[in-house]
Length: 89
Image 1 (cartoon, rainbow, N blue to C red):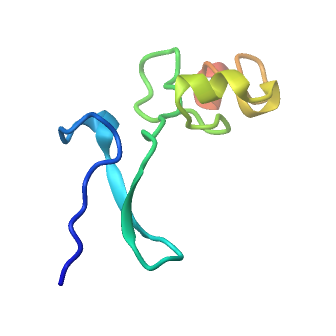
Image 2: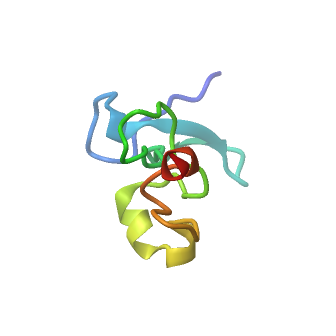
């Protein structure tokens, strides 16, 4: 028979903060594991370029706070805020 699953937290709605994935435990039970929200890399400050900045970690703001400075910018003028193409122009 199929094992029924229940949420492990009090929030019982399928919201963005309550996303789960299935995981099999060593005791051969299937349980929900809660997934973290996906982060996005910053956009260029020029506002013209459509993509995200390269060389900057794409993480949530709270995780970004704990990262070292080398992972939050690139070693160039305006690194971490403007893309290389815009700096050249």
